[in-house]
Amino acid sequence: MKLPGNIQKIGIFRALQLGDMLCSIPAVRALRAAYPNATIILIGLPWAQAFTKRFSKYFDGFISFPGAPGLPEQEPNEKGMEQFLRKMKIESFDLLFQMQGNGTIVNNLVTNWYARTVAGFYNDNSRVDSPYFLRYPDHGSEIHRHLALMKHCGIPAQGDYLEFPISEKEVLDVNKLLLPLQKCRYVIVHPGSRGSWRQWPVPYFAEVARYCIEQHMTVVITGTANESDITSELIKRIKQPVIDLTGKTNLGMVAYLIQNAALLVANCTGVSHIASATATPSVIISMDGEPERWSPLNKKLHHVIDWTKDQHFETVFKEVVSFINNAPVKPTASATPFSVSQ
Image (cartoon, rainbow, N blue to C red; front, top):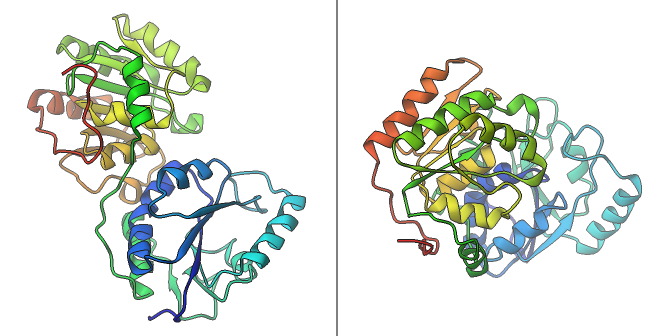
C-alpha cells in the first residue's frame, strides 16, 4: 500500500521499554531510508528521550507521552494529556505510525492526534477504517512484525539486524574504571530484570558464575543501583572473586562491556537485545513465555531457554558449558573496539 505523497513530518508512537525500542529499530531504519529528508519524531516514555539521542541518525526529536488508562508502563496524567494533545495539534504530523501493539487500547487515541495519515496495527477489537493499518501479526519476532508494517506501507526493509551505538565518552568512562579485563575472556552475569516474576533464581546464577570462574573466565556482575539486593546476594553465593559493577555503569557502558565479553548470561530482554546488536554470544532465560517474539534472530550465537516450559537448571547450565567450551569466534561488531586490556 503506497503512502500519500509530500510527507515531511513523521511521528512514531511507541511508549515502551528498552528491549521493545531496540526491536523497532530495523523498522525505523527502513522508514528513514524511505524518507531521508523527513523529520522523524518518537512519541514515547520520558526515558526514551535519551534513546532518540543515541539513535540520532534515525530520530530528529522526541515528545513525551503522558500515559493513558489501560497502558501499564506509567500512570496516566490527565493534565499532561491536555498539554500533549495541544502539542500534537501544533505538530500536525503528515504521517503517524502506531507501533505500540495490536491497537486494542491505543488506536482510539492515535486516530485523534491530528495527523494527516495514520498507519499501524489492528485486531478484531481495534479496527481502523484505513488501508494503512495491518492486522497485527500475533506470531514471529517483534522485529519482523514491525518490518511487516513497513512492507504493508510500501517501505522496503533495510535488514533485520539490531543496532546499539556506543559513544566515545562511554568507552572512555569504562576505561576510567581500570578494570582488569581482557577482551572475550570474561562473562557478564546480569541477574536483574523488570519485575520479580521475570528474575531467574539467584542460586542458579551463582552456580553458572562459579563454573565460568573454574574455566578461568573473569565474571562481571552488572545491574542498576536499584538491583543491588539481587547482585549482593548473588556475589555472596558465588563465594569467589568477581568484578561487581552494580550501580557503577550507565546503559552505554554496559553495552560496551557486553560487546567485548565472551558471553552474556541474563534473564533481561533489554541486555539480550544489546548482545544481539553487538554480536556477543548469550544464554538468556526467558521468564515470560514469549521467546519466539523476543529472542535474538541468530539462534547459533544466542540460546534462549523458555523457563515457562523447561524449568530445569541443567538445560541452562549445558548451554553455558557449550559456549565456554566451544568459544565461538565472535564476528566483528560495528562499535568501537575494546581497549581496556588487549
